Image 1: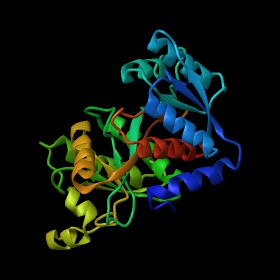
Image 2: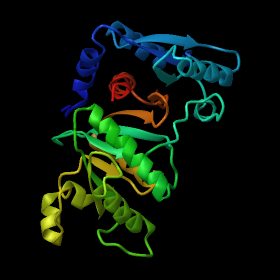
Image 3: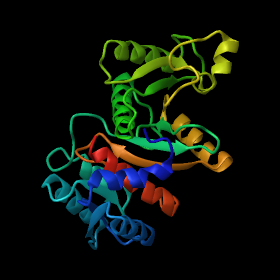
Image 4: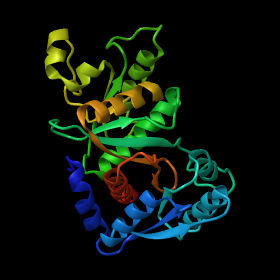
Length: 280
């Protein structure tokens, strides 16, 4: 099982076994993206198909078409607006829909923490309902499987650990736990609602008298909404020095969709994560 980000690239190289995946890069004119793709090519992870158009939205459509036709197995956002590439991906006639909701799968390495943390969703789904949360959970579990975790422990995060009808996040959390118990969410163990401290600290669970298979042992933190997920993620990066990798999943192929402010290491790690996810 992959437990640190520095294992991503070796694992991805082993997975491709000398046969790099083809990655369509939409509007490949961002120098940081170009640098990351070039390094991924040097490492034998991918072969980049670079699409550049005067209209960036047309570059996004061309890159998506390459995936749809089978000419590429991965998609990456270059110097194009996220809205433009997602519009091409979600096009009902010519996009990459699968019937499952798309979500952003984030993997974070926090200094001093013994394992990778999966945090979702931090970028796409603003206020997901129960059905959307179920898809987000399935997506992240698939990524955990790609990293060698056969049965990830998922904490459905809320502000409290008891069901309160006035707090929708707690109601959804318990429903997701029950769905998992019925085998509806794939190979995973789900517990919720759990406050963040209970998901990460067995001591906190003992103090509060809360037990369960995920208390103090969470691999995946399913956040109640985008705001909570994004704040947690940026707090870990800015205050704890966490490193990360992230991709969009739920489409026909993994999508490397990054901010221009993301580090070169984050971009390269995200490409490696996408390669591993493509084999899941």
